[in-house]
Image 1 (cartoon, one colour):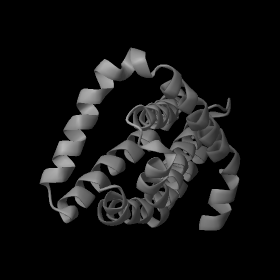
Image 2: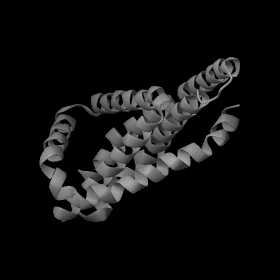
Image 3: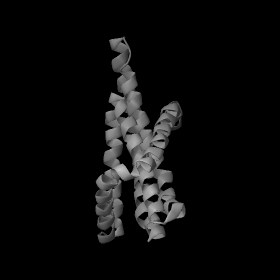
Image 4: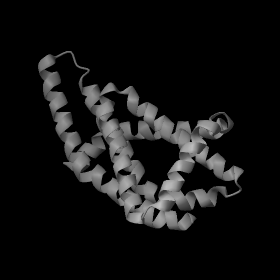
Length: 186
């Protein structure tokens, strides 16, 4: 059942990935215009990570990503919200790439710090967004009886996927980020 539901959402996940990728060059290109607004937030996050235990950092990352994934899932019913969040996350990746290049840290530093945990985190985020959009799209039918049934089915499917796939992926990602990715860039 899980594989079937995920396969049915492949195209929506691919669209979310595409929007994320589209956002990346914008973050790179508009680095100077957004640097003043974004750098203080990144510095604050870095300071928090440096003063917390790795376990606390992992839990904070997990709960932050859990909130984002829930917003994507629930906000997906409005269809446009996940696209905005995907674009914004891609924008941040592009911004961070440019920041690292400005500091002469290079792409290897970026890859060491992001690849391992992203293997778990990004699929969880894309799945949450796709499931939310799928719920939103199920509202778009003229038959009210069918709409209620379809929306209910999509919500049940999303709940199963969220509990059995998204949450475990986010938990793994958070601990990999706090215990492995952070070590690779320190």
